[in-house]
Length: 531
Image (cartoon, rainbow, N blue to C red; front, top):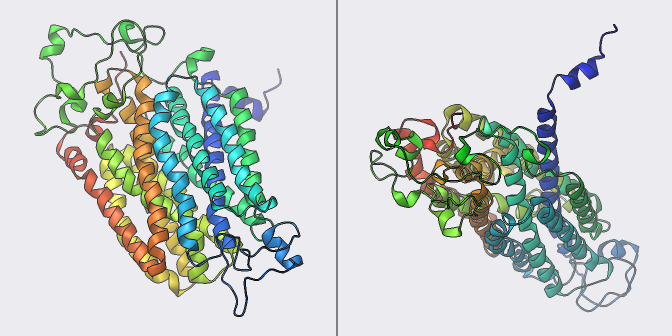
């Protein structure tokens, strides 16, 4: 009998369940990477929407020659409000405020929509909900780029497009996190989700490269091509996404429970009456330590979300999700952490253009190093938090190091390209690490917290609350950067350092509980014992 080929032996060495799990991991990775791919072009194109006017240029009407047509679209007569300073209306002296308004429109809509998205998403099939969001996002991303081809110079057009795009993109995050958490249990969650969350940086890098390819010749394609990619991935989602292992009779890595809380029609049903031994036995460290006033008293009743025991799978309410220990603190921490991260996302290429005097394409390519650092930072945060079993402490350490790193970045980036490259990598790791950990592993931990008594149906709402609150900071960061940058980029970095300090401040109580209480991660990420 002939021996099996090496490739076949490799394939059969994994079980059917493992192959499906790997497939879902890669599919959700690519789906959300495409979302971020479509968000990046606006930061790359900023340098083209507004150019520094050369001496002696006047915003007068004239025929657009070949060199001008690459900036203003197909050959046409320049209008009174159209100059070589950029694309009207962004060619005026207040261009930073106008570009900041575009960022704010998208991110404010995203923040508001995220609170609703989780509640809606947990009541609809994930596959249909996510497919709709990706198709709509692709359409409105491309619509922004069509303003180039149809010579649209209305600020309102671009703002409204950004608002609608921000709303439909909220379908993505709660959906992919819920789907991934259905397939992967709590074991090594920090590492798994740290690797998986690199989709953010991968999407940003691809978006920068795609947008940068056309930014100097035809910036409309910098939006149309990413929009087409997102829409195409929406079709892939509809055809291939499997929401839960039970849909194809795969075993789940989630722990099994007694019949009263097993998966199925009656899954996650709460047994309201505890046995005598349960009443008198020691509490789980998770219920004993996290967010208690003295670390000794049992979990306060308001911290336990009681679910109906009628056999139905009830969706958790918004206020019920807020009562989960740790949700409020991590949400407020993420608000400031995401403020820093998204300020870099939307303004870093323009900052590099201003400081290092590079064109829009080269600045966009250089800015991808920040995202490369973010990939390593997210994975490092996951590995450390798994090893130490302390999520809040890991985030706190990286936030503590990030603030002085940003100060050094603002000082040495003016010294040359080499210094900028080194600080981009280091800053990306320290800024993106806490952001990545909170939006993935921490959200999943809290969404399956033991105070929920097994109701993983709350995961979508919890994820949306945490990321929605963070998105408020994401909206404020680029807006503040647009308002502050005219007074000097150093002031923008001071604002970012202050935001990092605030993020750390909101974690102080959780860090104290983790360091003072026994048990992993102050109880938010301890794996459940199998029965």
